[in-house]
Image (tube, rainbow, N blue to C red; front, side, top):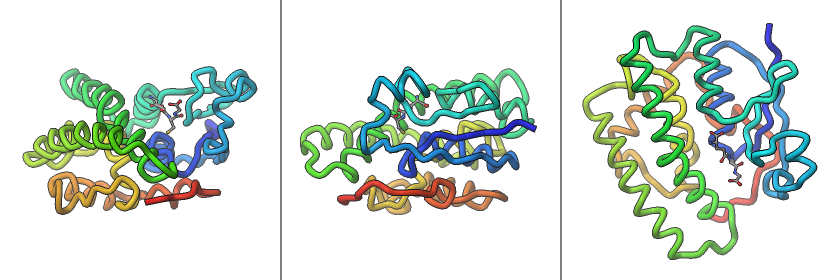
Amino acid sequence: MTSYRLHYFPESGNSYKLALMLTFCGQSFEPVWTDFGGGVTRTPEWRSAVNPMGEIPVLEEGTQRLTQTAPILLRLAERYGRFGGTNEEERFEILRWLFWDNHKLTGYMATYRYMRAFTPSPDAAVLAYFRRRLDDFLGILDRHLRERSFVVADRPTIADVSLMAYLSFPKHEAGYDLPVSHPAIAAWLARLAALPGWKAPYDLLPGKRLRCYS
Ligand SMILES: N[C@@H](CCC(=O)N[C@@H](CS)C(=O)NCC(=O)O)C(=O)O
């Protein structure tokens, strides 16, 4: 049986992606709380000991240290035979949405939410720019979900796990009231939250929290 250690901080949606996938797959992990707010991931010591890319999450799997949620999700899906694609078309679609999520939805939402909720005086113009981009991305996802129950197939895949992560935190953090602004996304999140084993981010990722200003 593989032993997992997850380097995380509670507000990290990227960490939530891995914690949730491991939980859905019936795997436990040792949580390794990381002082992201205190800047530890920017230190040369942490980078040389844990992740030269300077990012959370890091998943330790036995003696290996894995980073980047998309390939890790693909590996877990393959290993546990859950949430993967069953044919070439589905596998292609999963990759397509994982890339879009990393580049667009998660990339912008993580930065926007962090600045908006967890920094004391964010630049209003920067926030407005990010918000415009996110309105577009959320609109794209909402339109996609009007016609289907899950992102790629008639069942959830790791594309759903990746895309849902940053949309699953309390609404005062990012400031989107999704049932009002994006009802198809809200309905999809409710379907995912009803899956056996699902847990909310702060239930899966405990520990000292960042100060929230929003
Ligand atoms: N593409 C990466 C993104 C990881 C990421 O950006 N993590 C954030 C915390 S949730 C981080 O460590 N950011 C530090 C930085 O951007 O310098 C993944 O999927 O793991």
